[in-house]
Length: 188
Image 1 (tube, rainbow, N blue to C red):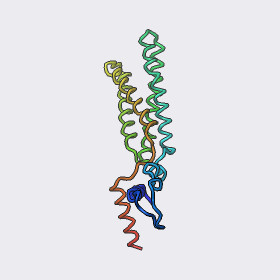
Image 2 (cartoon, rainbow, N blue to C red):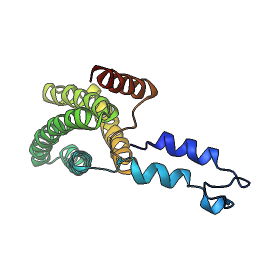
Image 3 (cartoon, helix red, strand yellow):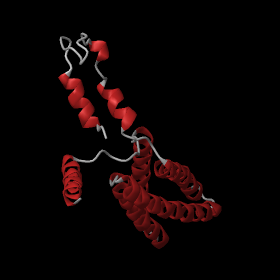
Image 4 (cartoon, one colour):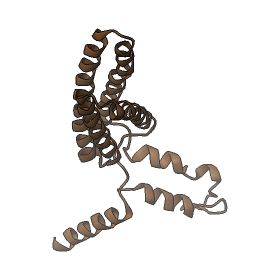
């Protein structure tokens, strides 16, 4: 199996003055392109788990966007705004826990830890904010709410602008895999 590293090595070995096996001159047009070689064969496009995470994070952003509006309605004097804010908090927290579960799947299937770490911090902040709001601790509830919304928007940008495919194996993982394959060959 040809790996992206092998393609890089082949691309580095070919120079404008080289000749191929038939003796024909190899030109720059014959050299493989590095970016195309890596993107074409590594299978790191966004898969089902990545798209699910994107969908849940998007729903989470939509749900949390209403919270400041409902709080503003309440602070303007309408008690109905408080009920809407409480309902919104229940929805936002529930979607956060769903996002946490999806982030665990992304970590397990795609070996990407950053969505899990970000979601874990976000869900912890939302949980603290939820109970601070229920206790009436507005000194904590309001600034934590602003920070939570900002963190979720940053996470939204990250999941939509970064590919959510399987990360490339590290050198250590490639060496360990190659060593295990050699040991199997020796056993046979």
